Length: 135
Image (cartoon, rainbow, N blue to C red; front, top):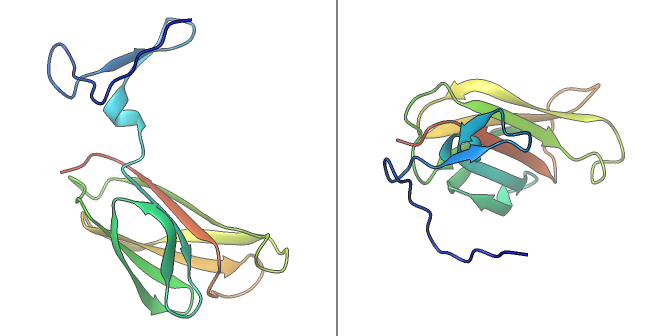
């Protein structure tokens, strides 16, 4: 078995241009396009705090069940793909949801959290993942 150990990948054509070929060999994708540019797992009860995160500078509690997540490195535009969820395991076993609100700029995204059949509420395990292009 071969092993490659490196701290940096640099594309041959341009530094950020690294192409990956699919398992079947018929499709390719640019590596930098496929990785998450930011993500967060936060405890939104009381004063919101990150359990763990990547490219997140701060979290602001903007109301019951609302969290503004500010990026360390901005996105290049607001056409990002954002997904989120709220763990049911830590919130009494109910189905839960986490939505992306209209508050989205190149420097932040606003998530909301609720038990599935009720109104917005703070959650202990709220998660968001952001894909897009960094500025």
